[in-house]
Every structure is written in C-alpha cells, then in structure tokens.
Image (cartoon, rainbow, N blue to C red; front, side):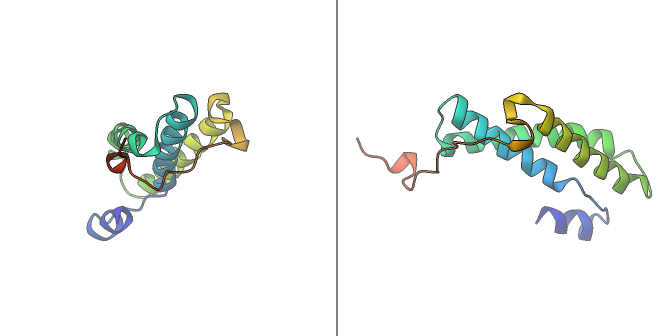
Length: 112
C-alpha cells in the first residue's frame, strides 16, 4: 500500500522500501532474541522504530528533485544494507539465527 501511495498518488519513485522493512524486522528480532520479548509486544516498538528512522531519512531525502530522488532512495537502501551487514549485533551478513517463532496464542488470550 505504501508503494501505491508513494508512486501513484505522490508521483515519486522509491527504491528504499526494503530498508524500512529491514529496520522493523531487525528491531523485532533483537527484542525477541536479546531481551526475550514476545513478538506481539515487540511489533509496536518495531513499528515505532521504523517510523522514526523513515521520518529522519525522509526529511533528508524529500529535498531532492528530479532524478536525484530515486537515486537518493537507492543510496539509502544500499547504505542500510551495508550497515546491517557490518553490524556484529545484527549478525553481520549471515543474519540472526535462533529467532523464536511467533506464538499462536496472542498475549491477551493467555489465561493463567
């Protein structure tokens, strides 16, 4: 839906959508692996982290005009890819392993 709004309504081209997804995915994985959170509780935090990172990168990129806007979004996508790969906390280029599965029962449905 974000791509439809961006390209259709806004008339802009973005190649950095996957980088935003990566920020949310890595935030959820770090909270689940290192802090032991449930994926259901980590999801809102991941959404907030993605919104903050996207807002900062968007404010820096939106000033670009013409063909520089798509080039800028490609640059952010590549920069975040190399940042994720070079970060030992994020598992480097091999990624993270041992991420627990999402529980079938939601936290608000657990009776105890």
